[in-house]
Image 1 (cartoon, helix red, strand yellow):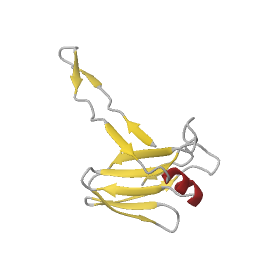
Image 2: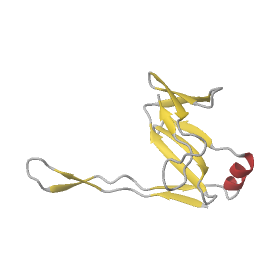
Image 3: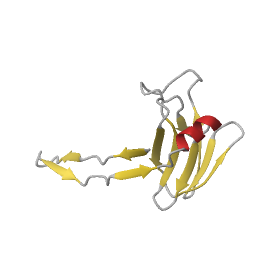
Image 4: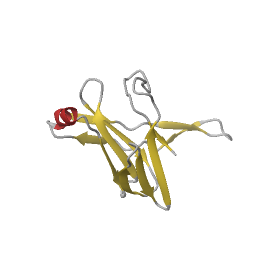
Length: 123
């Protein structure tokens, strides 16, 4: 099973010349996962969260509404330690900060039409 995130080309309009100039496109990123990962996450009823100091990203890996893999990444300042607290929130160290994320939706609420049912809110 493969997930793919494509780069986005952004056009910036200059205030002085009112002409569009292209901004460097984000690099294309391709993920590959083990064929049994979706089944394992579904059986255990879990998602994964981890940080990458080198890329400056916090990753969330879980299931999409169709039962496939959903990978979400969020840019964070020097992400390092990550732990689950006893209220179900995540606490992460980043650079000189402590950040806490918590689900702000009720159990039956969804964040969008794609069926994503949990939303981590940074505090």
